[in-house]
Image (tube, rainbow, N blue to C red; front, side, top):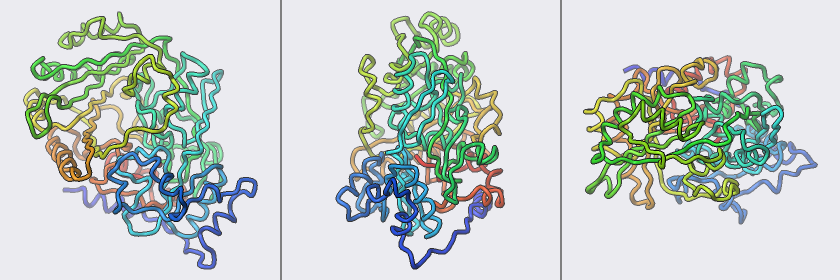
Length: 505
């Protein structure tokens, strides 16, 4: 088994040499003296004794597993209201040799943007107040601060045009910072690539507290922050490409149980979904209905589609390529792109688009893991998997994902992958945590024969501490240090193996 030695090599590359703390100056004095006098930092600083500390900390916690009395808490939160507050935080983090956790939306599945288990004091740099979205329709670009959530980005694009869109995630409360710096994907990725493929500039604070854009940081550094943003500094904003979409798109969601021939349809889906026209994204969700994982259950396969075209064309494609699905005209709904965002977010189509501006959401206990699949699974294999379900989401690759080189960005999962799997368990009571964690881990272990090997790969945005890699102890690494230790050239390997990173989310 080679992985332990590989991990040791990676950890050796992650060593970061930090300055000794200035014992004559407190951290608070440091951030105060290093912030812009025109924009005082004190209103953005929350110690544990502050009455608003808990509400600020908990506002962007999306997983109740990390909101317990035993969860390590930051000694301080900087809820930055100005770019100078970020600069002060980075400068004093380095000077006082502290751990800094960077948070935008808080959706990181294992809580790494606001929790550490090293036992060392840490603080959270919360970006949620830095959330401007500046759309330029003429150039089809936008500058988006990393504290914005995806729903805000979608809404402000739609305000300017109903035929422009942004290829990013389906959950509107995901933070831009974490989404892009982990790669990001959308239901249009087979046509337009990953979110990170549509990033053309960035503004950041580097390890020395300097403001940089793409020109100032250089192309190697810019390459490195696209899926490794929090490793080389704090990204303040990204300049993104906005893509054209039809005035109307088509969506549908249909379900089939095992009694309705789901196994045959899923088996066919494997052959078809990665090879469909680039304009069609056909996701598969496997879950259990009419029971639980420990009682009588019915396995259900739900097929959810996004098509950049009309219903007639969609029917023609799928009834020719996958007649087993039995799609009929009434299954499809033609709608605007912005209303399709509501559909994918499980909101009622026809509702106000302003729903996308809401940052709050229902919070549960959860665990996620992921895999990539490079060869179709046999029907016998599928039937064995049905006995292990919590929930599995299959996201098809192919299309333009097969054409973008694996070295174009630090995100390496391109050609050769048929689809990505997300394993998921959600529960509502803390006493059930061990049970559901075990179920998810058991399913992941069971899937070993069916997924990528040597190495077994995972999606960087789905951070999973079970995999045991944690990026350089929460410290920011300068680009020079990264080059010195070969970090830039290891990013693709890290992304393939890691379940945790320093990217904000």
